[in-house]
Length: 245
Image (cartoon, rainbow, N blue to C red; front, side, top):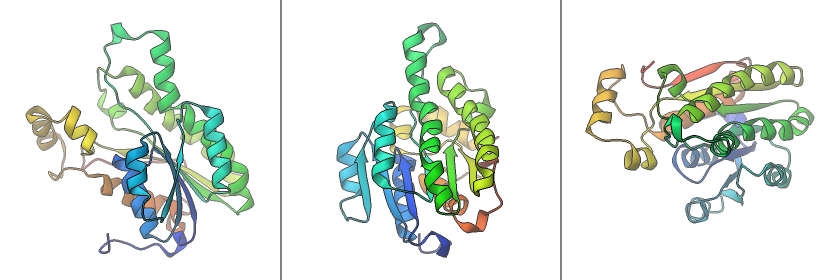
């Protein structure tokens, strides 16, 4: 990470990341820690979270984002934050005919609802600190018209609408709200569950840049959106996908 940008405005800032134990979330934690930020993150993967926070440079709070009361409690425990990164998500596949009401509601409870209630919870503290940055993680599956994951794609589309609405509501408090849209990022989960010869072929055909996307590519854009360098960037989508869409 030393060959990339350093953001002095992030030194000492309080950062809160949802879904921070693995994948993109773990890279977010590592990158903000490297900037000298004070990082708290939530997850339900205790083993991975313990390994990530073992050096004492980040703080793990166990929380299932489907439990809004627990989410509010974790945010309260973390204190006023300067940057909220709504990262937690699960891109489980499902056939349309297999979806019932409970499954639909549970998918949105993971992939969309926490974004709103976390943002609601941090607003007052950010305002007291003179402003802040909220970064919502979207997905290029929306632009790709991806099948076999209707609930996930719906949630991710809703995140952009939520981003636009909150940017307007929070702007007078100098709180910026943006949507960071990753392409197909090669996390361990993606490589294990979804990537095969056909997937590698699709990446080669669709991305303008042939190199695979990795979590660090997303984290570096998040640093920019969190830092004062992006102080007039709000209500926008920032796509990092190697030119897929």
